[in-house]
Image (cartoon, rainbow, N blue to C red; front, side):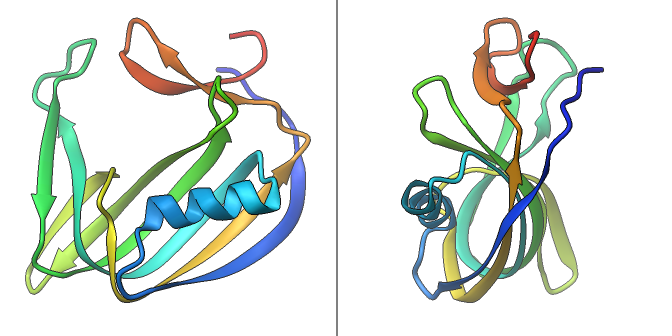
Length: 148
């Protein structure tokens, strides 16, 4: 285990509107407000998006089970934002997306188009120097804490 102490900085309440792309808009906020590290909470609905629902097998690197939906789903999700090795915001968000009596849970990826509204709370983390870097063994952009 590795860890790094920090403290809460600014808090942003964000209303993502119908048609917005969650990833693009949160990254745009991070750029505009110079947010280097954050925790993110999301609730609302998505018209469409892609998710990774786990590995096909528990091997390294993990072969992903990719899933695309376009049927409108309620979501609840938590994530983090850290800068990558090119200083771009890099998000990692996991959540559940449900419709009627079915639900999927996994890593939200791309084309996350808001249906009606998604509310987000972005908690800036100060004093954190962690980054997201490509792990050559895992083949994913993984959290790197000082000393990694």
